[in-house]
Length: 388
Ligand SMILES: [Mg+2]
Image (tube, protein in one colour):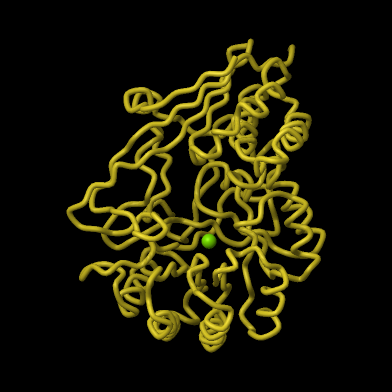
C-alpha cells in the first residue's frame, strides 16, 4: 500500500466552560472559585492525507500552534509516516522558536500511523503493559471554605483519594502561602498518609528562594516523600541549583518539566540535576521526542514520569518500563478535571476514571485510540487556521 502523503493541516481553537472554576491571579492557572464560570479554550489539530486517513490531536496551547507556519513546509507534501524526518526538519526550522508546535504535529502523525497499520500506538512502540498506576494530582490551593484551603483539607482529600483506590497523591500547594503554611501542608498530609500512599510535592516554582526550597525539602525528608518537584523561582531550569539541593536533602528531586527536548534533558541528567526525569509529549517533541528521552534516561538507569494525563501519555507509558506513575489531574474535591468533555467513546481523565486498583488502561483502538467530539469542537470554534 502506498504511503499516505500529507495534504493539509487544520488548527482549531475552541471554547468550553468550567463551572465553579476561576484563575489564580498571579499565574492564571485554574483554581476552585464557587459561582464563577471559566470560559476556557483548547486547541485541536487535524492532519489530512491523500489516502483519506486523518491524524487527530486535541491538546497543546495556542502559543505552540502559532509556530506551525515556521515549519509547515517540512510537513505538507511529505510522507505522513516519515516522523523521524519531520521531527528533525522541524527541530532545525524551529531552533529560534523554542521548538513549539512540532510536538502536536508529531502526535497527529502517530495517530495516522496507527490508523494506517490498524494498530494502537503503544503496539507500534512496543507493548510493555496495558494498565498504569495513577497519582491523584491536586488543583492548586484555594481560599474557599470547602476547597483546598488548609493543610488539613489536603490531608482529608488525600484520604478520600486513597479510599477511591489511589496509592499516590501529589500536592500542588498555594501560589501565595507563607513558608509556614507550605511546610504545614507537607506535614499534615505526611502525618495522615505516609506509609499508605506515595506522596509528591509540586510547588510549580512558587517558592521565592533556594533557602525556602531547602526548608520545605527538609519537611519532605521527615515524611519520606516520593519526589519533590520544581520547588523554586529558578523556574525549574538550573541543573546546578538542583544538584546542590540534592546534596542537601534526602527526598528525590523531579525536574525537567520546563526544559524542552532530548539534548537538554540529557545535559541536565549528566549535570546530576535530577533524580526522576519529567517528560511531556506536548513540550518535548511529541511521542517521538518523549520516547527518545525515555530511552536515553533508561540508559542512565533513571525513570521518566509523564506530565499530565491524556491518551498520548498512556500509549508511551504502556510502551516504557522505566516509568512509575500516570498523573491524573488536576483533581479537586468539588470540581471536575480541567479539560472539558472532548471524547465520545467514554475516554476520560477524571478523578473517578481509575479502576479499583488505581490504574488506567491504554486505549486499544487504532492510532491514539480515542474518538474526538468534532461536532462539539466545530460548534465551539473561535479561531481556525488551514495550511495546504
Ligand atoms: Mg509540575
